[in-house]
Length: 235
Image (cartoon, rainbow, N blue to C red; front, side):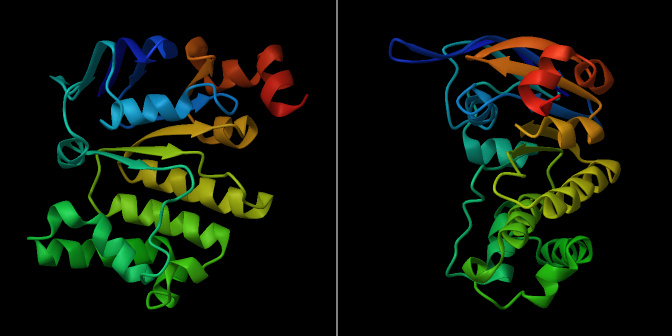
């Protein structure tokens, strides 16, 4: 479904990414593990058209999408849920969700049905639909950010650090929802530092360090790797 082949990104003389090879098959839940500043967000920005690759190619559903604009990539089915959520805090929960369905704005019935499906997935958002997004707790804001991303009916959702700043119990709830989204047919690429939680729900994973993929394998293989356990799981 998604294939990055030898993708590099340079900012002037600085190499943010170097020869990234990464594949996500349709229906998979794949995790990208790495510390802060390792290059996870740059990979996501490059896939979603916000950063341009210096070299290499990005294919999505057999199309070379490397030069596509971010809005066109949303129309093609790639949506990013950014780190830090990037909600509109003064706007209501429902207004934030409706903005997520902007590419479907002419299909009012479809937007209405999507809204109902988001409220089924996140009942707390229906309860608080008229409140400002900024009044929600951290966990509720993360659910809203994921819900907003789902409003454009993505084929592939990029989730950038969804567990950051959340209490362990809320992390578990969010990851259960991510698993459910994947089971319902949306392919997921998840960037995470919380390897323990991420590897429990992922099919496969990649490890990125200093802008390079250093390791890949099944979740089980990565979970049992001593270096991974020491670096990311604390065992």
